Amino acid sequence: MGFGLILAGFILLFNPVITIVDIIPDTIGFFLIVAGLSKMSCFIGKFSLAKDDFLKLAFVQIAKIICIAFIPFTSGSALVLMAFVFGIIELLLFIPAVINLFEGLSFAGLWYNGNAVYAQKQVSRKVLRLKSADGKENKGKKKLGFETVTRTKECITKTRNYILFFYIFRVCATFIPEITELEMYDHLGEVNAFNRSMASFKPLLYLIFSFAVIVLGIVYIVKISRYFGSIRRDTAFIEGLTNKYAEERKNRPTFFIASNMKLVLFIYCIAVVSSFIMPFDGVNVMIGAISSLTLIATSVMLSKYHKIAIASAAVAGVRAVISVFSCVLQVDYFVENLYTVEAISWVTKAYDMYYRMALIGVIENAVALVSVLIYLAVLLKVIKIHLSMFGVNTDSVQYNKRTRDLEVYNIVGGRLLMCGILAVINYIMGGAFHYINVNTEIAVLLSSSATVIWTAYTFSTVNTINKFVYGHELQIS
Image 1 (tube, rainbow, N blue to C red):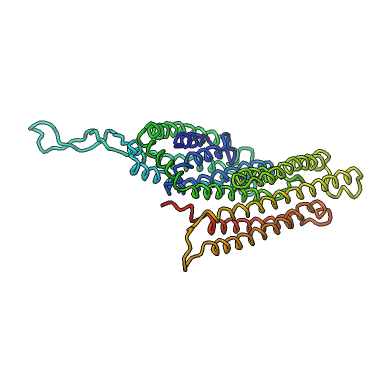
Image 2: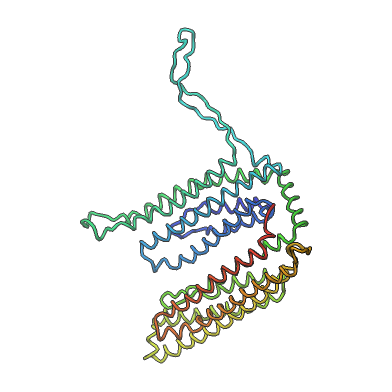
């Protein structure tokens, strides 16, 4: 039922993080936890909430990986800000995710005979206390002595608390060494050969805190392995969950359709967000292949309900290849030959290279636009199919399903049409970027503004679709 994946996902979080550099990316661990919760989240609400939070964490970690590319271009104080912001976001998502996960386990253990979930452990320790002296001659007298005290603790509580403690410690261990960059060493006080800035101790702090995280991480792995391992070996519990999942698959097919579509729409939002143009030294580091690959993923998932969605994936694949070629041309112009935009005015080679690069950019954005428009058209067709399957299939004086479905279809269709129009504007600005950049320095601002508007409206549209089409089917009784 996914407990092995949950265990593997948590284990991958054990390693220390330096600034925002993670040797074993946490996004892999969070995706494994999401995969492990997928089946049980179909009939246990707390697991569903935990799954959503862990999924958000996985994409936060992807954003962190992307930000690693910016480290060479950022100052020490900017690294402090990055570590702080990502740390706060992670804690705001991780703490409720873990709490919901263990509340879901508690509920599952109660309803599906989970003896291992509520396993208890006897903890003994010696405590220094006053106790009565031995012998009649010492009757009534007290003396200090060690007494063995045994307490019973539930493994579920101990495991949850240690997971939270370890992750909070790891975030703090990541952030504390970066604080040394905030010292105004060069601007306050007297600087001489015998003085050293706090930042010079940062490598030592990295070593100390990394060692501490590894030591605590070993304890962390042992604790979670014992707990989740015992749950996996609880045959009666796993069988009860398996039977419940099979029953849900049989009785609630629309729930699984709605759940898949929610993920499809979420991945499409990621494709839209990754359409930003982010040039560093003239090279767009947000290469178009990132957006295209996510669009391919969501199109393949959508093709389960309408085969034409594969056409969107195919066109997006072409765009991905063109974007790589476009990136090579940008690197060749701005990095290899060290040309600036102004060089086209007096260097013939620069002129030819720049406008060849601009033409490829136009082609890339045109192909990208086609892939998005195909996707939106297929998405509308799929929603129409799903509307006929969802909801109450009986008509009455107060409720007419066909009229209701038509109203929802018109609302969603109008919003998707507007999404298509904003996508046209976005990719026109993207294609014209290099041409606009020749005459004005606000080309990035113009293209980013178009993408921001498109992104905001896309998020609003997805929220509307989930609310009117899939939301009711995702309710867990």
